[in-house]
Length: 365
Ligand code: M6R
Image 1 (cartoon, helix red, strand yellow):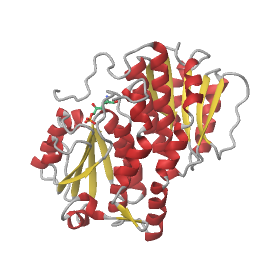
Image 2: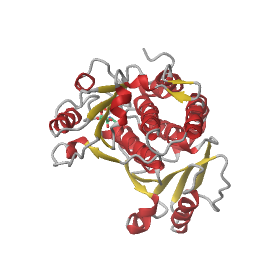
Image 3: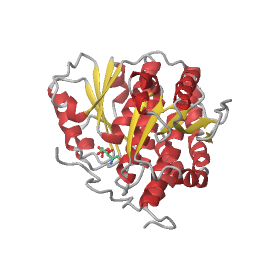
Image 4: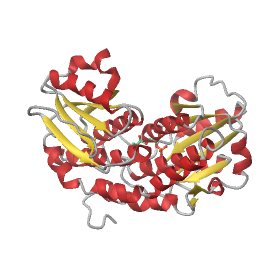
């Protein structure tokens, strides 16, 4: 039932504050993570983890890319790869490797094959971050951390992604404890997670503004999405959403890569979308954007409300998000990009919930 919403995708976008709260429920207490959320015997296994291999496809892969920054920041070595490559490589699985799969459906053929391969090569253990309890991935993994997004019907994944990020934040706390994470920092991270549903709610309040912004986007054929750090992965996810449902060709780049090629594409007909949270990289991103403006590129900027950013001239669309703390910014900044893709698709009249050529669950290679 879509309730008051025109499409399942919009309904699912608006469910995010609730399902994020559900995904945290009973897993944090008194400012700390409860490790029992990973299942029986998890703590003893986590003690032995030396590094993490994260493997997934599509949107779930983008969640993994964000998690790599989170894990490394806490001293945990991590690699991330799409399952369709990982399964056919000869990955070296060093002692102490935890294989982490991320999947909404738990039935993605490549992700399952990668899990089976990693087990055959003797990984220390496997953890599935998954949304479907009775799925193959859950059955075949040693540890499980369920996202509690509820059934996701829209082919374009939205609430599954943000709840995956929440689950991965919990995993990074668990492993971080065994590396560089202090008790004080854990308490801060947990309190920021607790604030997340309200922050996502505030991002959803931008819906009307984004609907207007979509009008400036709907006639485009191409777009560049930029970000740095965790927001590079957010940009990738935003570009994928736009591609999937609006059929506009969108490419995500790490903002620092701009001058290594894609800047040649920038002219007044090329929209450049950028996510700009308030963190140590923001000045670098702003200088990348100045290069875009110098070439007349139309800028769609989603910037943290606490930042003092100004770009002269017409062709700049500035939307304020937050202010939001860096540890949860990838979740919050994802929301306006989901809404933008949605409204552009509606304006273009595509089949939002069932985009052409795509299936909700990719159970064959
Ligand atoms: O069920 P999974 O999370 O394993 O699915 C992976 C991808 O097929 C999926 O995320 C796909 O990219 C979505 N359509 C993205 O919106």
